[in-house]
Image 1 (tube, one colour):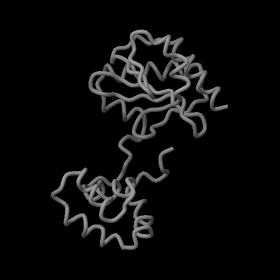
Image 2 (cartoon, rainbow, N blue to C red):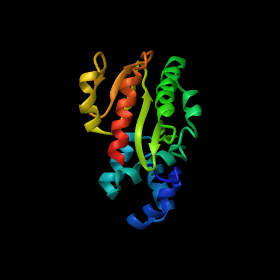
Image 3 (cartoon, rainbow, N blue to C red):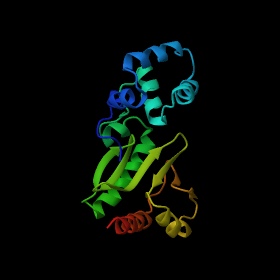
Image 4 (cartoon, helix red, strand yellow):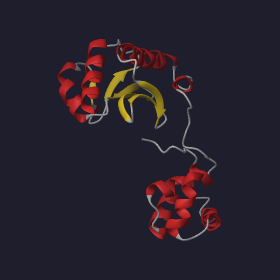
Length: 184
């Protein structure tokens, strides 16, 4: 589950405590490597100061002007940032599952639209340039339904679908039902 406070500054007290220097010191370090690319800045903090990936990422991105990890406040806001066809397909996917399971909460988590039951995710989706990904958050669910996903590319943790996928309601509902059963 994403942190409750998406601000990058939320990491600062832990950075000061864990690495023993005030944030002023770390901003000076970042100024000294300001001309470097993101991966080199992350590597510098990790290799020279023992930063964790999360702390390095928070400091580097804050120094680059990104003050929050949250890009979209609502699913509607997310849909406005992707291509119209992708948005239509994703809305249709979530509409089918939410019609059958209205108790699922429609949220943005990890900057993607997802359906959640309590603290567990049931179905998520993300838009890439040439296709969409759906994720039932369960390797067991993916494995169980792989034989029914003819024409789709099944990956380790997600399923690749075309931007204009003709919604397979039975498949979506069966995967959601299996995932909800796992959570219960």
